[in-house]
Picture 1: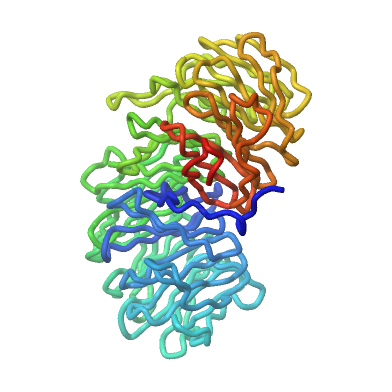
Picture 2 (picture 1 turned 180 degrees about the horizontal axis):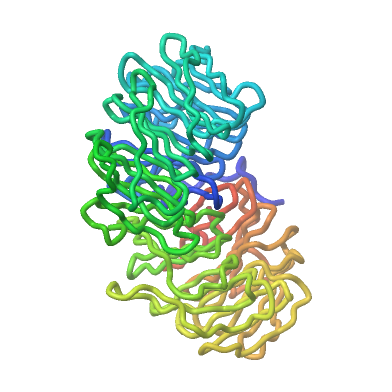
Length: 583
């Protein structure tokens, strides 16, 4: 009978999280989104990704926070004026108000069928959330209550953007797919007037920091400036040097004299609001993925834009050559990670077809250059033992190698690829031979690649789900969907032993550094440790089952004593005396 948590003493030295490398905002071509930031305490930006809200530090890129209380896709998040709170809205119409540091929820309410934008009042006591809905498209409420304190009516279609005047007398402004800009004064925030000169969707509406003016920008390339208190139009901004495409986003300079705009034409422009001239044009992105969908001008003058690729660009108005820094990451699920302990670099890859390089100490990120896997999902990653090559296997059915950069040159993929004849499911890189890699595929096959070519291939009677190789490169352990661990010799790929203890798919295998012990984990949460001295016949333990979901990886410490396992339960457990079969 396997050991259960009630029968075992839990490991005492659980690993502590040292850093978070956050995802990028998800994007859709032809649609903008909103990004927000604060300089209170430290420079932070906030945005959604799937059901998460990401607080990303610009001063400490690895010191980001993830808020996970939403149950639907998060479309917008915004800091309170003091930077202590966040209001976030999702596809189910729910708005959560929560503490930016503790992540404790203070309040929640439903604003519309789908929330697309949020704004706080200048005193931080009131919130408007707006978006899509058949009848109710917006909700104005106190930050600590769900009671309505406004009546946002008179729009006939989805509200795309909203904002609060940051001073008294308070005002709310909105713009919608009905091409209207609406004005709602306090008290009561009831509809007073509508502006109808946009010829296409007005995508974003924002008040200046002092509340004296507000601007609306649209897909018609038009920019209108209004009086902040009366809501009357003051002027429109037109220039021969204006955007050549739709305008998706705008943000005011801290002194309220200039307006930053972002466009799918790949540029950010800075307008002098008084003269109506374009002062600066900053070319940011190239091609389709470089379309600029959002922008934000922070209180300290830091300028940000976000593009269709999800990349977040840090801009300097005095540098019109392009971004001074680009924050990279993933927009979709991460499928694989690899690390080089010598250089401190980490690589990640996933369903978005990207491979991202991270500096573990600083959190700085960059994309690995070159033809990754023709844009298809990357399923496996590994670093050569000398740290000079990064191997990856992707849905294009190929094993590829990138030459790791030395600091002065970027990490970049080589042109050649090795076909592995199927969808890769697992991969192991030799810890002693930098040119030796083993890949398992859905073929089902096991492919040994050496020196840039397929050296040997064997057809399997099961689908390989996990693979590991001994340090002397003589043996391969393969976990299968047949609930077994198959041991192969590298030379000839002959099966030499089979472990049949598991009762579920074997999803993790790992050899100790001396090759004398093998750890195996399965989809039913069990972990076993095996000894070569006993011929892999009987496990040293009777089955550890502390994880709450399937085991995803098993890696030994260089001391050959401790074992780390990870799981779909989002936990890592370190087993202190794994070589003795003790937890």
